[in-house]
Length: 153
Length: 385
Figure 1 (cartoon, rainbow over the protein chains, first blue to last red):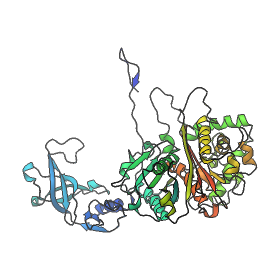
Figure 2 (tube, rainbow over the protein chains, first blue to last red):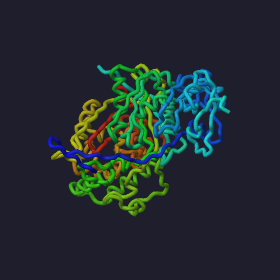
Figure 3 (tube, rainbow over the protein chains, first blue to last red):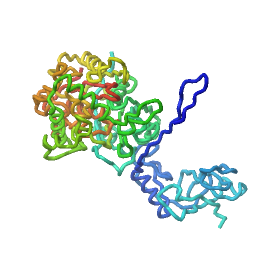
């Protein structure tokens, strides 16, 4: 506890609030994350037939429970994107990259992830990207290390 | 005149030390679905959702009401979160009832929960703050001196807490939702359990539970056409007071006495022990039963322990208390107050199964929270006001 006392101030002190928690993901997000371990991406079918990735437990339209899992592709289309020229420490990549909304093949709703495109000129809406899997996977969205333009390989 | 309000659906999860199979959303969902099913309704039939839980620090989810909106069918509907520490489950039900009584909504879903396995509620209550002595005692350590003061004032014999714990543990064996169930439990077993915070023993304390409780409340027209048995709300009251002030009586807080007086006036109750058929009272540590019996006017000051000792609060006594096994048997903190309210409603609906009080007509649901500073209560009846 450090104390700062200015001439016209009362006492104040900084303190750090920390606490440990556990988080249980439940059956739907749990299955999605377990799929990533095995390089499989699963979405879920909504009441109107659309496929949501990542899946949600409850239908956004009717609030009914959802349970029809649908495996989708590990490649898809960039719907929209934003270029990060100077990555910060906590960003997923240490070089310039794009945040992108990516609609995977077989999905109807895009999800957010990073694209390692090398340069901004290789990003465009409607462009194709595919997953780069992390070698050591743990059951986390970052088991997808990032996406990369499909024409890169 | 205010609109009438009735409970037409109740849902509870089984209370357990850990529900690792469910997310927090899945936990509240389970209770909510059961309440909807009990009411014979679907998500689309609900006009608004009122949710309660204990402090955010308990699970580390800020504004859980926002994250839980989809699990509770609140998309496109109002959702409101209530927070009054341990009494929150009761306060949440009262806010939900008031929306019906004020004719703002016709059918309201109210839910409260806690997933204690994802946190450490004991120590989340005792965070180290600058300029304050860190008591580091937890709830039991905080309340033990109040209990000692009660024993000192009332000259109650030492075994009263054991009698309460024994009764609630027997009752829990008759409630399929109860968390802590100890078949063959004996008073000796309770007496020999470790002393945690003198005079509170381990088996005189509540467990840490995961669980959720939900109710569907409806106005008169919707309650009557539901075809369900209805627990009519005959009165609701809440009171609060600061944690500390000179002259505060923590053993018999004025907020609790005033709250009860207000409730009884609304419900036309002149002699609570005679008028109520049963009561669900928030008792996280055994000795709080005699303390609250006095605070609530069931017994004269200093005599609550005699009521316990006489067996009056047992399932077959003249004033059964905590037929469900109470907070001593299940404590998903945010839900615990609502469970008291719901169990009172279950009794007057005649739906309590093995722990049913025959012919229960009028029941009390009670909750308290913080340092005995928040109180919420309702009276429910099988008879329409």
